[in-house]
Length: 407
Image 1 (tube, one colour):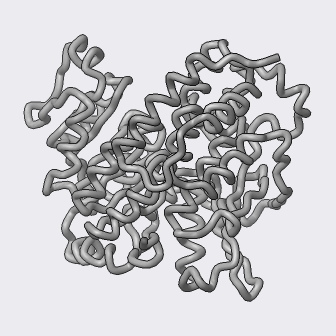
Image 2: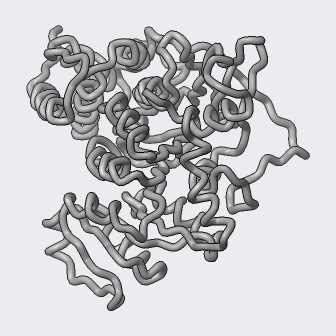
């Protein structure tokens, strides 16, 4: 199985040639009304001669994506929620074709006018669109970590077969990719170190975490994200999922992945090489930088992202995570070691548990407890098919609906 480092430059060469020949590259932005989608469009605005939008997709906030359709005039606008789409009185430019339903995402990513697919749909819902883009051999700017959490081995193998290139948009994985590329091949790497902000509850005791409210969990100290990702940051499940993603994206074993807490969110991740050297990527917390790097790779250009202010003092703090306080992170390392169907079950259980927490049906620490229970009771397969993965995804969600704390 190849990893992102083993074929990244060769897979990028054709798009790089197009860029140098002044050909505008066509983008399909999946999840265009979310924070990653909007940041991607900021990058497009900064490079109007280099990129154009072929397709936009959205599930909700359809008024936002309709306004974007007027600005960017894509060939396709995909509304993935049929109920919301049919209830709306659309006012679209004449050249924009409205497509309704989640299956239409798979159609537009395969369009020959699409050079790059920005996979920014949150959660399990992003799997099929990302898979279709990989199947079609596209460059995929990947923000949907759940694709690799659920089916990392299969997706990376398919990418090697089709020539698709997956480039990470997650700031942590982008940082690793940038640092690792400067240092050579995977044999020269001792460890990769993912940084974590620690979320809003870094200093709370386990007893205090029992009483965390939904409103408190939604107040992230650094990043402005959607509710699901914000809760994942508070539980550190987001870092657990990133550990699993890194395992497949970089083809590295779980025992060579580490996590450190870095509250300032300026060092986005680090790579430790076998000789003891450590390379880190630093920048202000601005998602437009990793997005732009994924779109323009292997080139760099001046863009809209925030810059470090070297005229002001900076303080960088690092500390190991407390796995007793954040047991979700421990689950992430377990699943990264186990592979197989474990990632799909953990992801589905967590998505369903977060929904129950937001609805007031679970307590904060119940999220990791429930995920651990569901994971422990699933029928494990080492080399699952996509059909098996989707079946276990449904099973885990049903199990989570029934879960009750034993106390």
